[in-house]
Image (cartoon, rainbow, N blue to C red; front, side, top):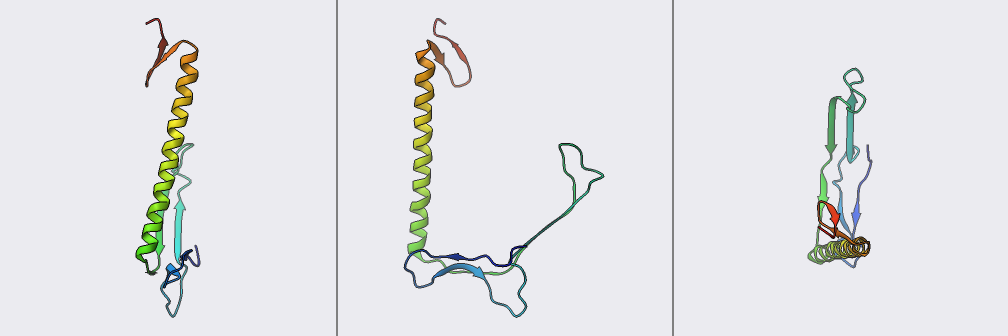
Length: 114
């Protein structure tokens, strides 16, 4: 169980908190997860559960347009860096394989004499 989950703005904003549990008279944990494992039916590589339950309490969400744009830009920067790393890795592996006289294909390797 998680007692309190809160997401705050790190920018200047009218609402400093984006997501937080709704205030109530008798608060419960914000997130609860219960899983009952069945050891008799479980195998070496397979786990069997009799019961799995998850509960998320009511949350207040306050999102400003500026925050949405900042999150969007952040995610785009992450994707751009990931793509750049993939391209760099692909160029590095193709160069080292071709130096040895090998023809590289996406699914197989064969000698360049073919």
